[in-house]
Image (cartoon, rainbow over all chains, first blue to last red; front, side, top):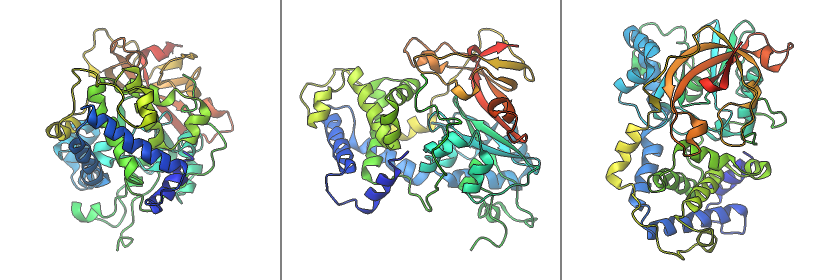
Length: 215
Length: 219
């Protein structure tokens, strides 16, 4: 949303206590936390744990492990395509906003892209919390009507013959894109393959890195 | 509700601008607003559909000018005020002015990880057979509920094909009203780009939504 610029501003001027809209928001949140704590509704230690969980434990590295394993283990790939929730739980990723997972696989014939036009639905256990652009009006409005234009915004151009399939997450089903394994990676281990997987390639707004692109 | 949140196909918002090396949260207040919202769902007792409605049910100019976590904050305030957990006077004053609501459950630290790891499945045991089969053509109903719905405007009235059947799931529209889960069969319905956006649309494009059975009608 348009407030993103303000967010960014805040990020760099965190200690500026001017009279901007953002400082008001900051003060409002601080006051609200103290009200809710004083009333006994929340335990600040629980808030710290929630933040730690989403900043440090739940993130795209989880999805990267899923993709690298699917690329390197055909039996796992088969299980992932048949019952993604169970196959992802094998790697110990499960829960909130990933209760009902579906994996959609990119091929030379079809590229998949995931959006939530109504809010911000996103598969948290494998990708973490969504980036600002995923929740923004430009992405939510255009992903379903002009996905090739959106891909251009990400610097991605696909062959005109590749079909584009957009999945709008309007219920509690959460989608993870399985990107195509890059050429020239025969015999690579899951750990090596993981270096090529990017978050955006698992949303469908990017492609995996090519061998040699990783530092 | 046909609100500003229902953005599929809207024009004029400009390009998508990804932020390189984006942090999970932009500043401390986003961290706390996120955590407060998640933690308050236990004492608040609301469900995810009520939360979504509290966020989207606001004037378009308000929805579009707030940042994502500002909308979360506003939604949280609405939900808490509705349930008498806090008053709007307390929020404006920034201090406690009334006693807490008695007998509310809190989220203790030891429950945080198990609660998130468990999640909340929305799948329920079916009590009747599915009305539609995979491969069948259906039309999305042309409805405009004043309350929460997960049927986006851009597919209403259009023809699609049932692609997946996900089983029976809690029906968001009614669950948001607090009148029970009323589970229904949930399907992925796929549309050809030109069916939604006109005949000049890229013919290689197709789009799907996940739709509860009562959103669909037989053709």
